[in-house]
Image (cartoon, rainbow, N blue to C red; front, side, top):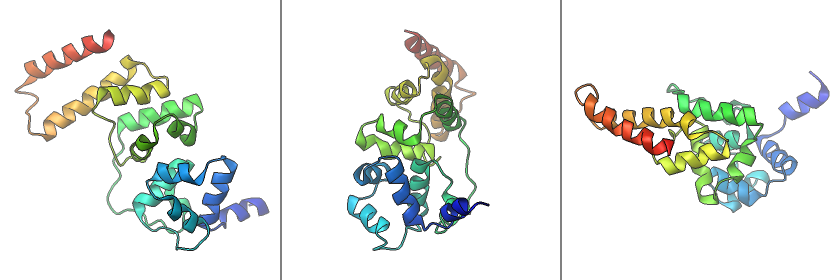
Length: 188
């Protein structure tokens, strides 16, 4: 391992964040909004005025924005519960990678109040939106057609129906009719 690689690996978490912000020309305020914390928290974190976060959610959001694994931060404790891989989220990440869009670039494509939600989707803490308009907004940013994203939305809605107690098999005709109508709407 080169001296430079060792230096990067041995950086304190606060230094990693500071270097990331500087190299990406990302203002601390924007970063704070992306991970759902206050600006003063970011200043204190970088200045080491407070200990670096050990909260899994905060560390996972920081890692998601920085496009790194949370394990790169010594403060991160690996969650004991299994991580569920969402096919739709993996599809969005793959499209993001194909387009060569960094997470910061992706997040800047959305209104400030929406950025934390997008970070939570990318880190696997939230499923894709049920709201078709919101989902198509994400798809537009990643240059994904409505036809490509529709099957993921339909699966998400089916999950919701099933979770809410609907027996999809006994209501198959109703479900098919609803989704046929939805497909026609999407094809317009």
